[in-house]
Length: 69
Image (tube, rainbow, N blue to C red; front, side, top):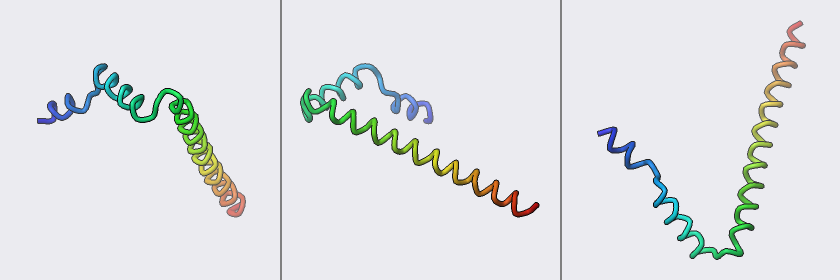
């Protein structure tokens, strides 16, 4: 049963081609670079936010260690 689920979840080359064609039809060729630029900026902001959160945790750990000395 699980094998059927795994095979059904895999995306093959024809499915990718179909998705690309649908995206081209919906948005047009001129709009896609703008969409990809926005997607890239969103990913960059997400990574920046997660790194800032990690830095904040490290600062808190250092503050706790300093106060316990």
